[in-house]
Length: 252
Image 1 (cartoon, one colour):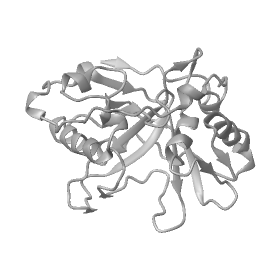
Image 2 (cartoon, helix red, strand yellow):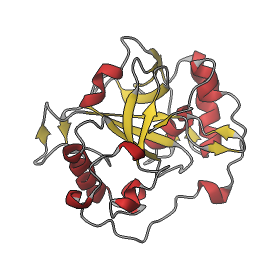
Image 3 (spheres, helix red, strand yellow):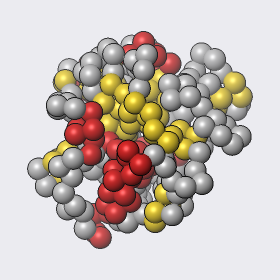
């Protein structure tokens, strides 16, 4: 079992400072996976996932962007029971509907080292949330940003910085290929490993970033409070501008 080292002095420092712009046009390009992700075969998987578990320590910062208006408003700490949707690691059983025993919350944490600095979770959160339009619009947006630190350690199956996917018979398409195939794996992992609380994986948009899919089992690890900001809040405007520049996203 490995323990996360994604921790440092303060939440904002950990998530936004020291982020030298080292990404190039080549490194920001989304890689296309030609392999097809096979069906999961849980019967062949190791019984004990412990060697492939990444523990996120108590105090690890997590960033989440969430809507506060529109058809699907959500609180910063709300685990979604409706699914499966088109999101990659929804573990809800079909058909699509309300599944109170299968709930999920997506977020981002600091990623791998890029130029000597961990890729910031704040940037990854924007990359993931706004990937379809590549436009961040603080003015008219009802989106909010939540930054919270874990109240308890989390046990997440590591799909990017371990070889579990290969051992289990999968490939890189699980994090960057068709999402419907990845959801089959999420459902199988959830059933096979009852002590696993979610997944940590490379962002399909920015592979150096790390995203997390937290399942209902992770609920006790969430704190009672978070730092929450409207996307248009002047207090975080420099951080949002930095994320847009780094990703080459449009800032409306």
